[in-house]
Length: 126
Image (cartoon, rainbow, N blue to C red; front, side):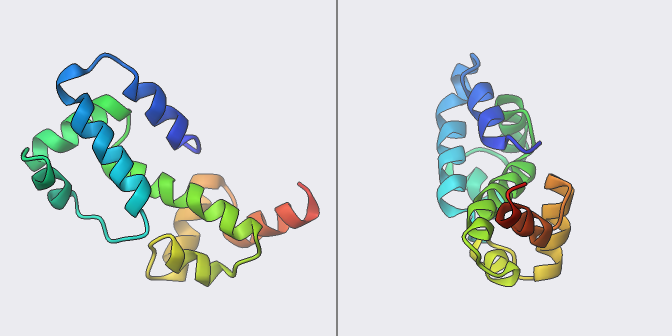
């Protein structure tokens, strides 16, 4: 679950020619705009497909739901910021979470530790 980018990259290399282009563009869009409020219906309409088709194609191509991919992208983006010493609340805002407590909950679910423990582990060399 922690290797969202690697999993997405491997799955995007699979042979899904009809959807590869727009799913590839979607992945790029998410990686560039993860800190924004990304609406799935906006992404679907951006590529002129229905919401149901979009979410189905994305999961088939990438191997996870769009929301999971966005979450993991945000958590991966948070790690270097935490390592640089940014506060947890600052990192939460920078990666697209309006509330610190929700960010902590999501980060812990994805990594098995709180952002503060992650940050302390980096500084102690764990």
